[in-house]
Length: 375
Image (cartoon, rainbow, N blue to C red; front, side, top):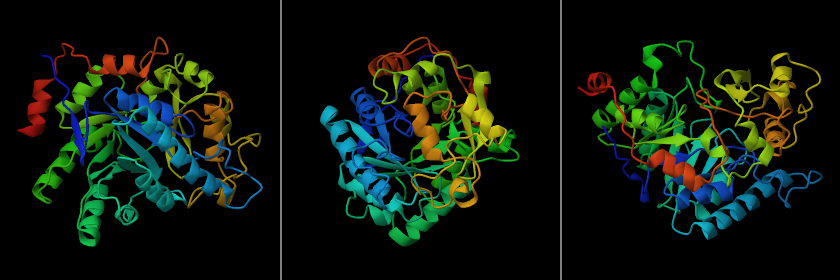
C-alpha cells in the first residue's frame, strides 16, 4: 500500500512533512542546512554545541569568551536561517549537559527559534527559560518511559504545562551519544515497545496525545513508513542530511560519508560518560587503545557540567574532536554516525533528498506486527 506522509504539528508550528533534521555538532548543522530543510517542508535544526568555536567572537585568551561566542553565534545563525526561510519551522538543539544550557535556551527563544530540542540530559527546568516566549515549542529527547514520566510530572507540577513533543531515541541505531542498556537487545527496549509504553502512559495517565518523533536508524522512505506504522508521529534524520550541498561541514566531511559502510560504525567512550557511535578512523582507534598520542586531550571550552577530559584527564575534548572532523580532518576527528548505514551514491541538494524521502512508494507494512501493537 502507499502511505501518505501527513503534516507534523508541534505546539503551534506545522511542517509539511513529519521529518526533523537532526542537530549535528560542531559546525555540521547550522543555518544553511536548517533553512534548506525548512524550505523543503521539514523542520530544520541548528546544533548549538560549540557554535561559536569558529566565530569571530571567540578569543581563547579571554576568560568566558567561549560562552559569549556561543550566544552571539546562535543569534547570527538564527537570523541567517530566518532570512533564507522566513516561514519555515526552525529549531535549536541544546545539550542539557552544557554549562550555557540555560543561556542558550533563553537566547534561542528570544531570537526566533520555533522549537527548542534538548538532549544529553533531562530538561527539568527548561520552561523557566522560555516563559516569556509561550509560542516556542519545547521538545525533550528521551530514551525510555521513565524519562517521560519524570519530565511530565515535574513540568506539570512546577509549570502547569507539558512538552509539545518528545524525540524518542532508538538506542540500537541512533548516532552520537546514546543510553546504554544492558538489555538493549531485548524486546522490552525495542523502539516498538518504548513507543507503545510512552503512548499508553500519555493517553491513560496524562490524558493527552503528544507527538512522538523517532530518531535513530532512519535512512530512507521505508524506514519512515515503518516508524509511522508503529505509532510515531514523525522521524528525526541525521546522517542522510550530511551528504547534501547545504550541509555546513567541510566538503571532505561530506564526501567521507559516501564511503561509509555499516561495519565502519563502532562504539567508543565519550567525555560525557555515555557511549557514542562514530565512524571508525585513526582517532577512534586511538580512543579505543587509550593512546597517549591523542591530541584532543586539552579542554578548550570548559563547556560541560561534567567532563572526563577536564576533570579526570580521560578520553578527549569533545569540542575539539567534533570540530576537527567538521573542518575536514576526517582521520583525526570524531565523526558521529548512526548504526543503520545505507549506501549514499552522491552529494545532493536538500530539496532532492526531501523529495526522495517524501515521494509516495509502494511499500508493504507488516500488518501482523502493527495489529499486535495496537489491538
